[in-house]
Image (cartoon, rainbow, N blue to C red):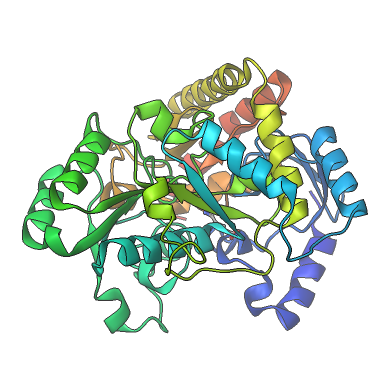
Length: 435
Ligand code: HOZ
């Protein structure tokens, strides 16, 4: 595969953009590559600036569940753009979106639209603090809730990818109120809540973490979080930026039957446009300005393009059989890849739920951040590069998820499994050489 133009673009990008990218993980540094630059995408295929084609399992890190440039989404966007791209004045589409979200997501009675997942979690935390009058929040190691100051503690995603615990520029005094806990370790959480439970405004969690790679909650764990919050008067915040509308129409909370107090959303709800949202019980949401006094605002919030792409995407997801199809395709892919790894003699711990999953290059099961970090990231890097060379794009980090969408066809999945059969062998050889 020739990447001459992509490499030139990267050199040029590095002159004008720090690190050549607008978000760190996509830089490819963790897998020893410079990034590809995308020219266009359609269905499950992305095409780079050198004309190379790839089957895409990143899907813009989750939003493209119905595929790239889906005709219904494109039509909705065209129609909205022709009527203006932003007004900063309310539109009917915002009401349609709010009503749809409240209809689909079990715990949400009211919702506020924002512009990214980071904004959603940052605002939900402020609301939780404003509502409870408490300062502390509990978050889990390896969970990533965007890059707001108070949440950059033991985070997944880019921080896990680059092996950094936090970020310069975040004052100690700010993260003083953020208490990290190991995911899936109920005993430790009970100890923490026993000590400081009455000062905790909220426990925030990705109900199925997907930013340290995908990690599944132990049986009953989410229910125990709910009980602990009730016991100590703290709010339970589900960060469903990734799991929302993916694990089911109502997200992880519907799948597991747990009602959080607040939920943050992003990615799919914007159909590929920059968007986020947070919502929950009316009684709590009514504390937001201008109904209440917890301040939160945004010029582009509820943007008509984002609403139209989001509503079109949610409309497709409401069609019958969609989640069964996603499950079937993802199960087929995961089994094929697991078999390929086993044939190659590579130890991979597979975690999958619905249409998202991760294969950790590890001989041990992965159930929290510490076990995820035991993965052989060098072997993953070889795997990534070999898959790319065979026309398959996985996340350029061991600590991110793969996403299957409606646009993946059986032949795409089969081609991926064939590529993986070769890539696993090469990853194994390279790790045996200590490369
Ligand atoms: N934080 C996102 C992944 N979980 C985006 C990474 C990127 O685009 O670099």
